[in-house]
Amino acid sequence: MTRRAILSGSTFERQIGYARAVVDGDHVYVSGTTGFDYPTMTISDDVVEQAEQCLRNIGAALSEAGCTFADVVRVRYLLPDRDDFEPCWPVLRRHFGEVLPAATVLMCGLADPRMKIEIEVDARRRP
Image 1 (cartoon, rainbow, N blue to C red):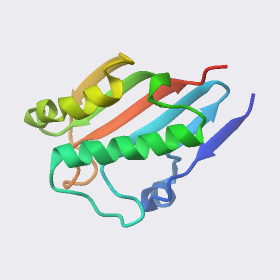
Image 2: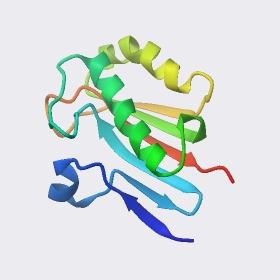
Image 3: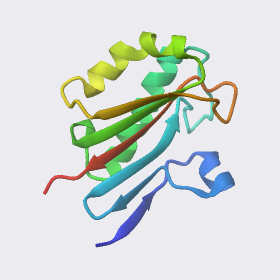
């Protein structure tokens, strides 16, 4: 089995020292991912738009790992404001409604006050 890091180009990866995702055998671990558009390092003020961008970023990492959202087995949602979660449900349902991964929702502070949601997933590549 080999371990491979997937980088997104986010400046945070270099500054902090982590990978967007790690592939370890059949397992794919995608780091907590926020709504930053990595090429421009900009972020929307709208939580729903941030959720959409989180999932675009996660989708790109999954694709590079040879997976899709259908391979996600666990998802974690982190938000500073519990009132921001429900408006994101339609976006989350589009990606996970058929997959039905195990899920956790945590209310907590995030690293940057502009961040309104962070999403982390674990996936398993299919043979």
